[in-house]
Image (cartoon, rainbow, N blue to C red; front, side, top):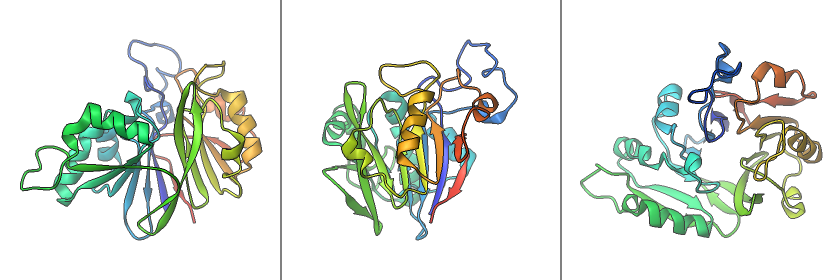
Length: 254
């Protein structure tokens, strides 16, 4: 399968509106970060989207995405959910209902805030045509096993995902021991790394590196970064096989 990293930014994105720091003014395109999301393209051709952030339209145009077959939600904060209306374009192109998968509490939230998109196909495609299913454990999608990875995000309990030898965990403040046990023998992991100083709902550089050291994936990429982390500066601080993620990164995962 192929992983396309659509965005590695935090909730404000980078550059931040009104900011004139070195990262926000940088000419390095790897310092331009849209809100956090990734796309998994299976060898059979299906596209599985992780989260629908508010930059989904721009990300789709940038990466020439022409279909979305399913969406996995990590949680329902605005920077991971509020691009849900942009799924309308894929419903129109494909003339099909797109399934969404999320924790049970996230399902309830989406039904309450975006109930109008949960509808059956008809002759009209002026709105997204979506259905939603609660995740209660591992499940199969297009012949591939999806393993939800429970993590903490402050007081919230949200999901990361393992698909084959790849794992994706954004907005993490703690990875429980029971979840670390699900992360053995990974080729690639994408992991939250908000900033240098501590934060109540996200891990920082030091904490992210500590988890990376325990997970021991062959390659590790930091995601969900604020403008406080400059690409080249952070790259120079990282050990071998640990990398700074960037918008548009593509990885082949066997």
